[in-house]
Image (cartoon, rainbow, N blue to C red; front, side):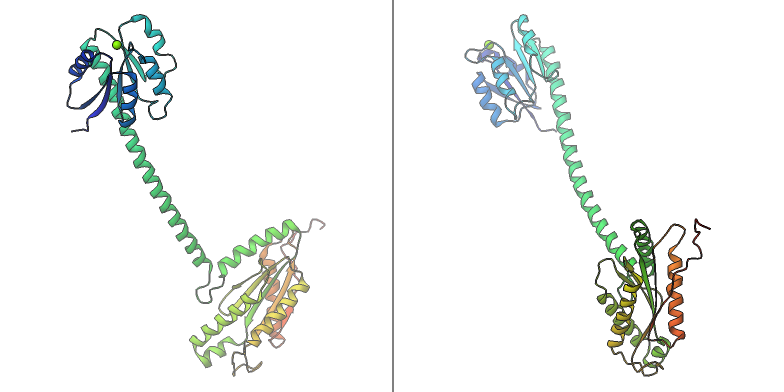
Length: 341
Ligand SMILES: [Mg+2]
């Protein structure tokens, strides 16, 4: 059983109200009576009417005036009205200023069948509107729920992205992130025609360290080196990543080869100053690193691998020369196709 709908019937004559009420009698309807336009407006304030049946000829305030005032109120503007009139000549005015479909008319004496049909149509429209509003509210709630879920999902994705771009052992960017950043900075430096420098460094005699102190100490050592290197880099675009087992790589966008050499020396000193005991190292009694430095202004035809290869070459040479040092290597991109050749 649905909730009864409120209907307002307005007429200045009590016998007309009684007739209307009798004709409309239905358990699905809650009929509210008003004997004047003023009373109708008062009832409209405390009910949510599905329909108003409004007598046109009334003293003081007639049906049109009442409807006009209803139209001026945001709360009552959309309530459908059926004007009840004795005169056929007035219905020309009835539709003036009203949305068609929200207004209809009936002539006195009332034809019960016509009354029933018209009222039924308006009530059906009202029920459909109510159902629609209910669905809209449900949809709004669902949308709000989905928005919340999406925000949670985005946050989880962000965390996942972060996790997948960080090295599990040291917490600094991993090789994947390094590759992405190098590629990004490569394009950016190419556009800005600015040097991009790269340092690759390797912990000296790390195998001997592990053999003597164990793998847990080895892990802890890598974490300390990573943290020291990451803390050392000050410029926002600079980044140091774990490149391989005991290898790290620093990307220095907008840094010249000279600048990169200064950074490389600082890195070497920073690690030495950690004073991590390494008694089996033929270099010193503490942990040291070897570094390769290179720099290039990316030009079309060159690829990031050229820069990596050059820095690797420097690292190789640094090891050859006795470790605990940096060596610069020119980036001579084999893949470069000079337009002048
Ligand atoms: Mg009347």
